[in-house]
Amino acid sequence: EPEVTQTPSHQVTQMGQEVILRCVPISNHLYFYWYRQILGQKVEFLVSFYNNEISEKSEIFDDQFSVERPDGSNFTLKIRSTKLEDSAMYFCATSRARASGANVLTFGAGSRLTVL
Amino acid sequence: GNSVTQMEGPVTLSEEAFLTINCTYTATGYPSLFWYVQYPGEGLQLLLKATKADDKGSNKGFEATYRKETTSFHLEKGSVQVSDSAVYFCALSYNTDKLIFGTGTRLQVFP
Image (cartoon, rainbow over the protein chains, first blue to last red):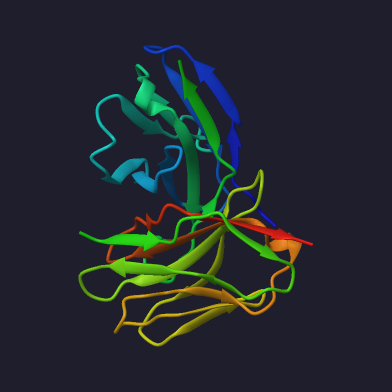
């Protein structure tokens, strides 16, 4: 069964450093999403991306965050200058069509980010 | 705003016990409702869904019924197995791409 692959599985970084989390979507999927879960809290939507543009973003997704598909395959989340509160599990998700109503997201296993 | 509340875990059961994980939601209008499951080391996988009131989603012996009157979507299974041990997430979506999740409930099943 096709999978969404995320790397790294775990990254430890110092506060203020830049971090890039990578996602390889399923090949025929066109809609891409990032979610995160701070330990013990809810899984939260960060951003949706389609046709090389952000289609929706949450208030969490401030200027420190950016997304892109640099080579048409990987979908990346960059955090420009990490803060302690960015420590979380980051999930990439993709879908063939807009993930509303009955359409289904396929999630990756997540990248755990620890900011020291 | 729209939100999902699910019961705190962990839920600890013996094999073949009956499982209920409660989920209630707050939403304007009628959202689509989902249960996702995350097995250790894996991504979130869709377990079942219901897109309108009174629909019952089912998969792998799990069931949940969309109850508009109680704004609930409780997950049930008649006889759990050790392999059902995982974290279960209730979620909704409404007129938008994004899913709104609950905090997740860890289920531990012992032989």
